[in-house]
Image 1 (tube, rainbow, N blue to C red):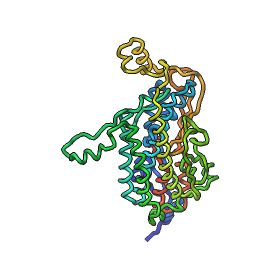
Image 2 (cartoon, rainbow, N blue to C red):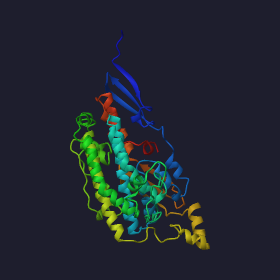
Image 3 (spheres, helix red, strand yellow):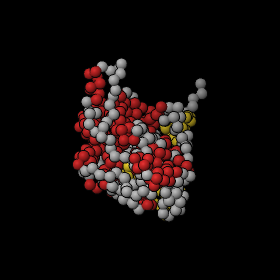
Image 4 (cartoon, one colour):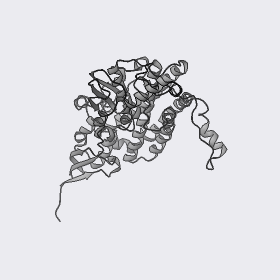
Length: 417
């Protein structure tokens, strides 16, 4: 019988680890990968082009749908670029709220990554554990914006509204006993900040549970140690950012190196890896969960003591409150103009970047003085990471491709845009 040693095969898009939108053409020698060619674009929705045909404030919702696991961080970079062009400073309370929700988003992102990465490699339980905590944070998203995912909560000039004074509760149903209902609602009696404060007290022990399942697990280490190694100098050359760069031992985090909002006033550490393999990147992200929890606690303690405005006091940029809009003609006109025509932004070009959970998420914007951007370019961290997939996969086994896609924490909304 004729023997074929070299062959080409498709990995994905149907494979669960390929997110349904990544086609990898693998050149194999037996079970060893000699070349991996990622074919992207299956989720292309022309976000940048669409944003160029809409007023500035109507594209915030599109940003949520780029990296659809790190919704508010995408909005943050976009509204920061508009604020830079307008040359406005937002209220300090809005800055603290933004930073708090950036870190809530980081935890949401890393929990999904942890659960899905472990599931891809073969550890089932972690997925169920991590989604247990995600539910609480999704409730915080819903409490401030009315929606669990695509919040559109950050606005040029601040945030849409102040934090709610009551937290939605589970309601009576035929499926829950009175005792179950009380245990579900025990931490929902106060404001959203009280609910989040309770979460930050519980969360470190939850991270310990994930680590008990994985960190010293023999099979987990066999699947991740020494897989997808990228050295520090090469990681810089490849344009890595975020945990992919820090996992290779490079101390680079925009929250420390180029602080935005109020990160320079907050005490936290940046975890750094040593060897640059998948296991190091796992450890970096686990420690980032702990550091984000610490940042949220500091934001909560400041926000509890310092009430104040959460939106700039400028009727041309900030919409009037609902009560004024329904009683005053001028407020109704401002409201109508802001939400239909938007506002004109001075001519110029600007780049604003945030340390998103996956790396540096940047928005480059050119304004020609109109009410919509002349050009919008999004710098997605995942795009540089997937470009290195061939290099990271070479001479690994087929089963290691799943680990490497997982360790990159890829979401195709931002790659294909």
